Length: 119
Image 1 (cartoon, helix red, strand yellow):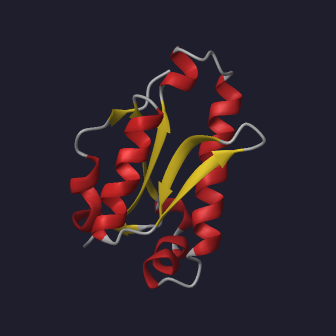
Image 2: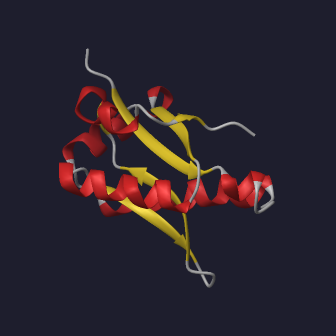
Image 3: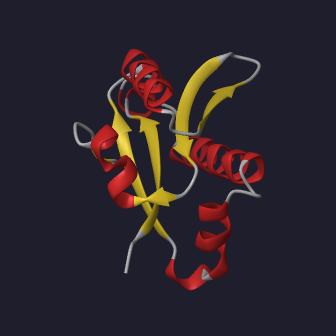
């Protein structure tokens, strides 16, 4: 059976360098996931993913900084991967990115250089 997964990439420097509270960082990930789910709600893989709520697979990864996150968006655009880059307002700071649910083998390659997010 093919695994459908959702990748979320959060900026690690928000916690380590900019000293954002953990709750604020978690909220960024929640915002991005909610937004991308809304944007691609009618997508077939999103629908399949949401059909079995108890078996959702998410992978939360860490981008080192803003530039790393922006570079990822470029690669995702080039590959036709659908995502939402969350930009916190009013600061206008890109904080997190979430892709819509995909078959793991379709998108895993874009995330190999990122490590699991750690606090």
